[in-house]
Image 1 (cartoon, rainbow, N blue to C red):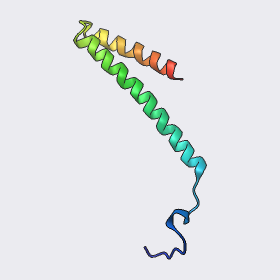
Image 2: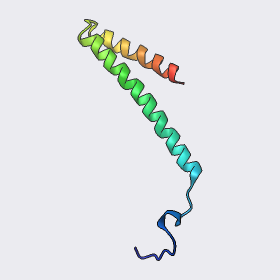
Image 3: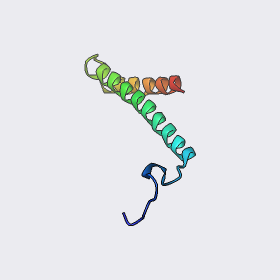
Length: 74
């Protein structure tokens, strides 16, 4: 507000595009792996609660599905 811009605001400051691309890459990776972990959690909870696997079976399913999901997404 206190600065006087002579041109449009869109061209006022130079952008750091490598930093933007790095942040975007981290966001996409976090979204991808976070979704894989949540899907593995939902499947393991379904196996544990409804499939009769119990807590230990659900935990084992979660670990196996998480490792498989992360391996396949790489």
